[in-house]
Amino acid sequence: MIFITVGGGPFYGFNRLIEEIDRIAPALKEDVVVQKGCSTYEPKNLTSFRFLSFNTSVSYFKKANVVVGHAGAGTILLSRMLNKPFVAVPRSHEKKEIFDAHQLETAKRIESKEMVEVVYDIADTENAIRKSLLKINKTWPPSEGRQAAVKTIRNFLKKEKENK
Image (cartoon, rainbow, N blue to C red; front, top):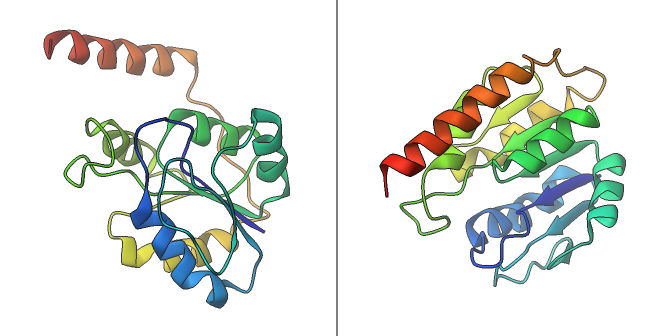
């Protein structure tokens, strides 16, 4: 099963990703489940939910062979914790899918990880999923440590403060 999640933010849909997943779902030969959030597109070729409880989301993460999602920290961390190959599709600030470019920055930062494929062009989504399906029996590398996370958060907060 392939689980797609766009997060629980109350303001931004991610129709671009949901439409592409719906288009390619029949060719994937896997069950596809989507948590589509505020996306308005209604998929025809897969199972979708607007929002899921945290426990239900975790259940889908555990069942998934591959997780596809926006480049949100929670999605990345849960994929890592559960040792799931992850396809990051960062939302686009230019396309009004998010309020800034932090998901793009996050995707660039994790792109070098063996268990991650990053999609910058939505047409590359199917190829990224197929590559990730080959990683099912691999594992995420050891954590870079708490200090790296603290540094990233501090830098983000510093940028936020400077932009106000």
